[in-house]
Each structure stands twice: as C-alpha cells, then as structure tokens.
Image (cartoon, rainbow, N blue to C red; front, side, top):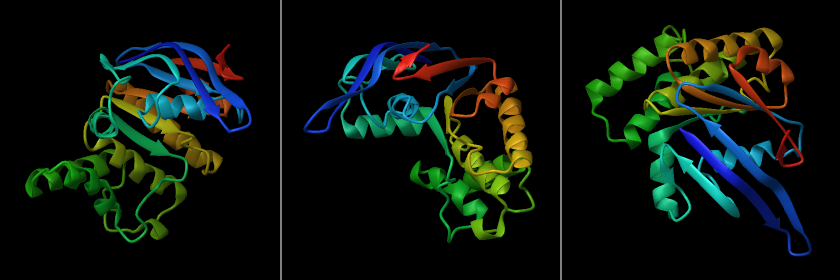
Length: 219
C-alpha cells in the first residue's frame, strides 16, 4: 500500500535549511496496523503529510497503492487522497453546526453518491462505531470520545484503502482513549489498513507493528 524509498524533506526558511526527514525507507502492506511513534519535532507530522499526499518529499520516491506521487499536480493529489485515504485528526475537525449524521454524510455528498445509498452508508457506519442513537446530535452535544467516533465514521464512509490517524487519542481522557484504540483494533481485524501517528508509546501495545522516528530518521 505504501512504499517510501530514501524520503527526504527539506524546508527552506530563507536563512537556513531545515531537514525534517533524512532518508526514510518504509513499506506498509495492505491490512497492516502500524504506529509511528516520536516526540515533538521528530518529523512524524511531516511524514504523515507526505503519506497523506498533503505534501511532497524534496527527494526520494513515494508510491501510494502503486501510484507514484512525484509528478502529480494538486488536483491529482486531491483526487488520490479522496479515493485512497480516510483522515482522523486529534482535534476531530467536525463541522460544529452539523449533526453527526451530516458530518459523516459530507464526503459522500462530495463524491456524488445518491440519496438512498448515502443514507444506508451513513447509518451503517454510525451504527458500526456505536453511535446509532446519536445521529442527530451536534458536536457540542457529544463527549470527546463520541466526537472522535464521528470522525472515524467520516473517515470510513468512502471505503478508503488506508486510515491515517494523527494523534487520535491526544484530546481524550484515558478511558475514552482506550475505547478509541480498541475500535481501531476492531477495524484492523476487519481488514482495514491503519497508520497511526502519535507521541504516546502506549499506543504500540494495540498495534501490529511500530516505527520509532527521531530527528527525521527511523531508529
């Protein structure tokens, strides 16, 4: 699913060049559950942005599901993201004025999915994450754990090949964090490919493989 060869990312600040990634080699297969662990400033967010086709490496080769992103323009990268990746963020990134149902429905609207099929998929996914009784609730009526479940449902609704989660338990209490990790384990056991970016070393206890990143290098 993911093949990275000698990935380097250099940011030019005008005065100095900052090397955020220093020759990353990483292969992730279909149905893997991988945690990328590293402290702040280690390069893990830069790695996530490249994995998620939100940015390109300075040098090196990245293939996502066999497609080389090197020569893709912004529209092609956007299309690839929408097709291949479901994102889950630390801050949930939910629309505050929309219900749980409407938040999960949004990617299907952009994809042009018809009303009947859209309704079936949204209700199925929300029931899957144990929010069938919270479909009409807005984010301010949900707990942190419930908000993250809505975000996970939104990431799943378009049947992506990869779920990319950035610090998904970072804003949750320990109980809610464990429940979200257990949900990810259940999704992985169903065959989903999951990549989690985190600074919390306890996350690796739930995952199949983990990668430590420090100072832009895998160690």
